[in-house]
Image 1: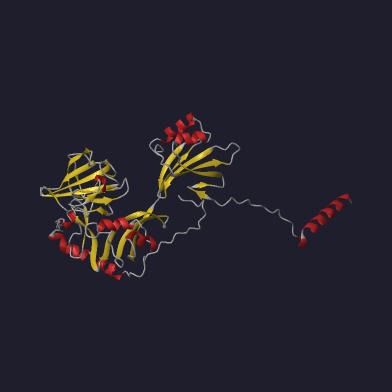
Image 2: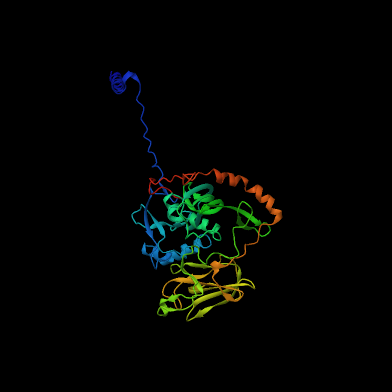
Amino acid sequence: MLRAFVIFSALLLISCNNKGGKIAKKESVEISAPIPNLYFGIDLNYFEVKKHKIKRGDTFGKILETNGIDYPQVYAILEAIKGKADVRKLTIGKPYSLFFSNDSIPLPEYFVYHPSVSGYTLIHLQDSLYGNKIIKPSSLVELEASGIIESSLYETMKNSGINDDLTYYLSDVYAWTVDFFRLQKGDRFKIIYTEKFVDDSISIGIERIKAAYFEHKGKPLYAFEYISDPNKGIVDYFDDNAKSLRRAFLQGPLKFNRVSSRYNLRRRIAYYGNQIRPHKGTDFAASVGTPILATANGSVVKSGYTKGNGNYVTLKHNSTYSTQYLHMKKRKVKAGQFIEQGEIIGWVGMTGNTSGPHVCYRFWKNGRQVDPFKQKLPDAKPISKELKAEFSKYIIPYKTKLDCIPFETSTTDEIVINNNKNKNADPS
């Protein structure tokens, strides 16, 4: 009787908990892992990141010691990463991040130095010590751009949304044929160039200009990049008639030449009490520290200092021409060196007799100082006859593409950058 009652009670319990007479099954609860939130490949679900910038006096060791890692551990870390990651030179103002584990004792577990978008240095600071320098993969993209000058080339590039670094590359191409400080409103350009990107959207710099068209004062001027000497790998720019755009001399010794005082044998000089003193040089104004370029290939015959000239360099280019560069902040070359056209020989300063920062550029022809802007200077060596026919075929697709680029739009290939990304999105 008792046994029957127990069985009945059990059946009644089952029927109350299971409608339809089915036996209840225990439900399993799955705990899902958090979605990874990566920053430099480190999951922020398990770390707290603190972002800083390198300050004057900061060193790798000082940063770690300030954050609770004592010197013996710092030494061990430096030994472990030797030859794999270099943190000896940290640039003031560049960012770095420290990752602290979510433990009761907050000590940094990772140090990441990320001075640029193209790569970073990651160092593990606890237990298994290691360090790596990670270079992010980049892609080379061919782009097209065009514009119409309103004020300056730089402002036109900037206002049109074009990478304004392209200004300097274009000025290099036309350095011998166009004075970019004397552009006219309505001058216009078209460019085919390559640019490097990481993450398909972040530019890490212009690679080079492959072809260009510049219209100055209504005069069209094409430029095509071409290897003029295959044996030496020399790359130069030529117009559509295979004539080199390069001249034996640059128009001036600066990247962007702004003449503040021309060659004038009857100039009154304020520094000398406004007396008439012949000014046999051409002054190019620029801020202190601006690189000064050799205007042509040549040998350094003098590199020194005098009370009047300040720091100066004299170059002998051949039996006919010599040039001199005065008032440098610092000289980069020594007597006896051979210098190529466009090479940096010093930096703009205010040494010697001068009232402001500039480089005084002096030009000799057959031993006599002359005005460089009034000389008919020789062209550079032309393209060889053997390569001329090949060059003519090579430029056809680039010339066709240039001619098809409209002036109405600033860029024909648009790179879209998402500015709304999570600030902790993984940049690795």
